[in-house]
Every structure is written in C-alpha cells, then in structure tokens.
Amino acid sequence: MSVTTEADVLVIGGGIVGLCSAYFLLKERSRVFVLEQNEIWSDSSGANAGTVAVQNKTSGLQPLALMSVDLWRQMQNDEQLDLGFRQVGGLRIAMGGDQVRELQQGWSAQAEQELSLRWLEHGELRRFAPWIGRDVNAAVYCPADSQSIPLKAGPALRKAVEQLGGCVQSGTTVIDIEPSGDSVLVTTDQAGRIRCRHLVVAAGPWTKGLVRDLGVDLPISVDVNMLSITEPVGFLMDRVITHVSGILSLKQYPNGTCMIGGGWQGQGGFDTNTKELDYQNLIHNIRLAASVVPDLRNVNLVRSWAGFEPVMPDALPCLGCLPGEPNIWIATGARGGYSLGPAQGKLISEMILGKGLSLEGTAVFDPGRAF
Ligand SMILES: Cc1cc2nc3c(=O)[nH]c(=O)nc-3n(C[C@H](O)[C@H](O)[C@H](O)COP(=O)(O)OP(=O)(O)OC[C@H]3O[C@@H](n4cnc5c(N)ncnc54)[C@H](O)[C@@H]3O)c2cc1C
Image (tube, rainbow, N blue to C red):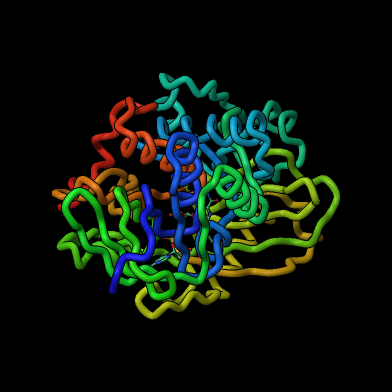
C-alpha cells in the first residue's frame, strides 16, 4: 500500500493526553494529525470524574500534578479554552482514628512541598465547611486542588487543536506501526498509510497492544472505575472532596449536579471489553458520599456508569520514547491521568521538539523502566 499522507507528528488517541500533546506541539509545528478509532473523547477522558487534584497524588506524581494544574489554569484563563476548570480548593478527609493518623502522616510528609496545606478538625473544620458530615473527623485543605468538566473540556480541546491547524480524524483505527529509518510508517483502516517523523501513542489501555508488536511489553493493568451524577440541586458543597484512602471523590458543578466517584470497581475488564456497574460496590460509594455530605441524602441519582483506567504498577506515567525507537513516543499509564493530561502533553511535546523540559526528574517516567 502506498503512503497517502505525510505528517510531522501523528498522535494516536483522541483523549486528554493525545489532544493536549497535539495542542502543545501545534504551537511550534505544523502537520500534526490526531487519529481516533471511535469518537473523539469517547473513552476514559469523556467518562471520568473531572477531579484535578494535587494532594491526593503519590509523592512521585505531585510535581507533575502541580505543573498540570498551572497548565489547566493557563489554558482556561489565559488561552480562553472553556474546559470547565475551576480552582475551588480541595478537602482530603478522614473518618475515624486510623484514617486521621494516615491523613496526619501524609500531611506531615507533604508539609515541605509548596502546597500551602492546612489541617482542619473540630470547630475549625465545621466553620470552613459547614456542609460536611459529623462522620468526618479531620481534613486537609489544599488550595491547588481543582475541578474541570470533562464534557466541556473535550470539545474545547478539539476545537483548539483544529484552530491551530491540526487535523483531527475520528473513526480511524491505527492497525500497524512500522519504524522506518528516521520516520515511522503507520497503517490505518480508513486513512491509508501515513508516514510521520514522530509518532505519539496516547491510546490509553490500547497502548499496550499497539506497542507489543514492537517487542515492548508494558505492564499496564486496567481498572474498571464507576461514577455517578445527581440531578441538579441547590448549593451543597464548594470544594473538591477526596478521601485519604482514595475511596471517594465528590464535587458539585456550577449547574448544581454532584459527581460521585472514588475508584469503586465495576464488573468486566479490558480483555473482554466490558465495563458494567457492580451494584454492591456502587451502594457503598453512594452511602459514603452521603455520610460525608449528608444533604446528598435528599438528592436523586440520574445516572451511573463505568469506564477503563489504565495504570502502571508504580502509578507513574510512561512518558518518553520507546527503548531503541527514538521516533516513537508513548504517554499513558498514570493514576489520575485526566488531571495530569496537560502536563503529560506538554512534556511529550517538549521531548519531541528537543526543548528543555518544564519539569525536572522526568527520568522516572521513562517507559524503559518497565522492562
Ligand atoms: C470512571 C472514571 C473516573 C475517573 N476519574 C478521574 C478523575 O477524576 N481525575 C483524573 O485525573 N483521572 C480520572 N480517571 C482516569 C482518567 O480518565 C484517565 O487516566 C485519562 O482520561 C486517560 O486519558 P488518555 O488520553 O490517556 O486515554 P483515553 O481517554 O482512553 O484516550 C485514548 C484514546 O485512544 C483511542 N485509541 C486506542 N487505540 C487506538 C487505535 N489503534 N487507533 C486510533 N485510536 C485509538 C481510544 O479510542 C481512546 O479514545 C477516571 C477514569 C474513570 C474510568
């Protein structure tokens, strides 16, 4: 099959990482293509909870998370992309003695970082968040914690990429990747063969399968996370809530709806391409949310769903070129990959452009660490 298109950079994946990579690349390069097998933003990036938090990340991810929050704010405020991003601040909560101790340990460990964290309990906590339930014994407030509206962010990013001259094509699956000298030949089902100088594989859980044929076995596992949204109601809370054990994320959007998540597992799996609700787990998730914000008890759920989250064993992203393949880059596998999407995209663009990186210590993200 002959080559039908020449691209400077070809990005596989129309989720947050793929679109952010294209967005930052297009500020300096032309002929950037994004190929998406389904609809743009149709997988994890469109199905997630929109939590853009810093303090709930492992210490290895916090610098990346801080960088990402800055980029979210810059894109929303300075570059006028309507991502639904708001830096509302977040409360990481603890319920019961063991959890309070765990929260305190995490708080002490993070005290040296520039997060301006604030410990809250007893009357101070009630004054700070009068809507919080009596089952919550303590919380740490982090002003950097934020939220975004995934249903807004996807279309806004796509539009921004196209306005910068990028080509975004949905319904096109990459079926083969072939390194070829100082370029890469990519075979697709709908757009023929494309030769590109650089290839970015930002294909979420599909990344593992796409690079396996290149002799690379990424140890990515895939969680099936559940999420619920309520009907719109009056004011209930004004902060992003996360739980010290990672079992709750909760927020209210400006339209009054409340998003309830926390990584409670659904049924199915990536291997069988099934993602179903697990009603027992869902009940625990909802019950926990209602004990943290008791006024939620009077609110109707509108919808619950499940989606895939690809995660590396160390929860850090794979961010860099494939070992031995200087023109093939991958970006996936971080726990909380939506919040980290802009930073992942920016760093991949800087790596490809051969620029100085905006963040130090990115060697720990090297895809080569996995083998
Ligand atoms: C229910 C749920 C809640 C979550 N909540 C949060 C949260 O609050 N905060 C947070 O930070 N993270 C959250 N996450 C995780 C987050 O959603 C993901 O880490 C992130 O969206 C991954 O983005 P991505 O661009 O890497 O992948 P994706 O969004 O999966 O995009 C990859 C795209 O690549 C496409 N693709 C794959 N193979 C091919 C191919 N061969 N050819 C063409 N296209 C291809 C896919 O169709 C897909 O659209 C949540 C996840 C779930 C499931």
